[in-house]
Image 1 (tube, rainbow, N blue to C red):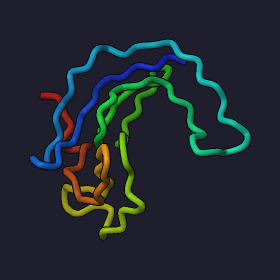
Image 2: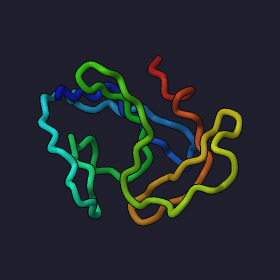
Image 3: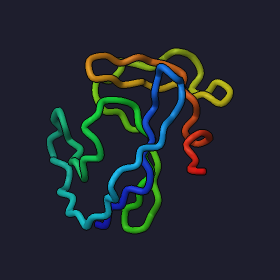
Length: 117
């Protein structure tokens, strides 16, 4: 499988905005091992480490040329994000991960705000 990270954005809760992270190009041929038959604490294999920083991220990548994008969490996770509707105007309900804490919150929708200019 060919794995290529296109963009990484990090959410900054103090400013309530996303910031583009200029990271070194990640463009690798990787071999993904199949998921284990018995599910344990970490059934998903790690394809590539993008950052060691805790937080909430919006990542765009390709696998074999097919584009993907998703909110990714690094650090603590919320038990739930049942704070209301999944969308509230141009905001989405999600977990804002931290090194030693996590908060369910509405954040600016990365589909709208994470656009390189």
